Image (cartoon, rainbow, N blue to C red; front, side, top):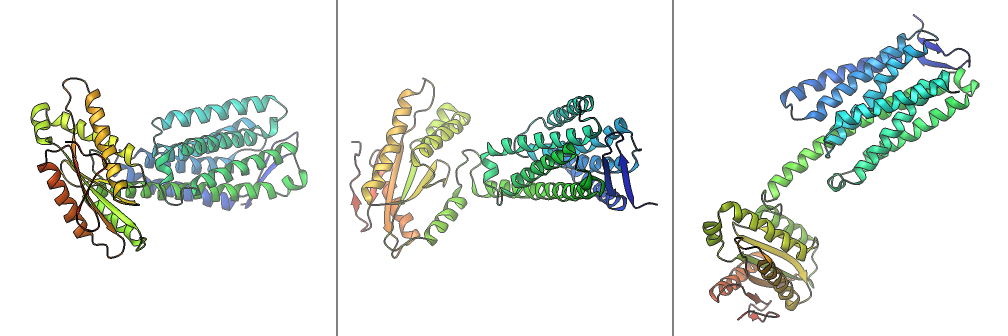
Length: 407
C-alpha cells in the first residue's frame, strides 16, 4: 500500500498530499477516545457536553477515514468527509459552551454546518471551485472560533477558572491557522502544494489544536465541577454568600497578609424578630426576605469586604478599616438601607430591621476569638437595648459611639 495519499482536484492542478498512515492513526485515536467517553455520559446523562465531545471525536475519526478513501477528482464526494470534520469542530465547541450556559448546542452545531454548506456551494460555483471544500472548511472553523471567543468573553464564571485564557488562545490559534491555510490554497502556491508541505502542516496543526481543545475542555469541565463543589462547601445555598465555614476560611486568608498596623472590624448582624417573620408570613416569605437582605447588604459592602451567613438569621461582615467610626458608618448605612427598603415594601411583605454589634482590633496581637466575643457582647447589648440599633467596641474593649444610634 502506498503510504502517501494524493487527492487530485483536476483542472487547477491543486493536490492534497498527506501521509496515509498518520491520518489513519489519528482517525483510530479519535474513534477510540469517543468510545471511552461514551460510558461517562451513560453514567450521568445530564452531562450533555460529554455526549457532544464523544460525537465530535467519532465524526472527526469518520471524516479522516473518508479523506483517505475519497476518489481522485471526486469533488462532491469530498464534501461528505469535510462535512463530518466541520460537524466535529462545531460539536466540540458546543460541548464546551454548554458548560457555560449555551442551552441549544445542537442548534449551534446545525447552524455551523449550514454555514459551511452554503459556503461550499458558493465557493464551488465561483473561481474557488477546486478548493471549495478547503476554503469552506476554513471559513466554518473561523466562524466557530469567533463565536466561542465572543461567548466566553461575556461569561463571568468562566473567568474564575484557573488558566481560563488557554481555551480562547487555542481557538484563536485555530482561527489564524485556518485563515492561513485558506490564503495559501486560494493563492495556489504550486511549489508548496505539490510537495505536500502545506497539507502536512495543516493536518499536524489540526491534530494538535483539536486534541488540545478536547483535552482543555475536559480539564475545564473538571475545574467547573470542582468550583461547583467548592461553592457548595463554602457558600450558603439560599443566599449565595459565604456560609460559616467559607466566611472564616476567607478571614484566615485575609489575615495571612495583614500588617501589624492594620485595623480590622467585625460586624455581627442579626435580623430582628426573624422568627416572628417566619411565623407571620411563612417560611417562603422568610427565605425571600433573607435573599433581599443579603442583596441589600452586598450592594453596600461590595467585593472588598468579606460577608457571610454565620447562622439562621445571623450574618457577619469582616473588613479592614481606618478607625472605629468607619466601621460604625458602614453599619449605619446597612441599617439605614434596610429601613428605607422596609418603608418601600408593599403591604403584606415582612419588614426588616437589624441589630449590629461591632468589634475592632489591630493586626498586632490580633485574636479572632476575642473579636468574636466582643462582637457578640455588642450585639447582645444592641438587642437588649431595643433592637434596630448599633453598638461598637473599640480596640480597648470599651463601647464606642456609633455615628447615629436610634433612640
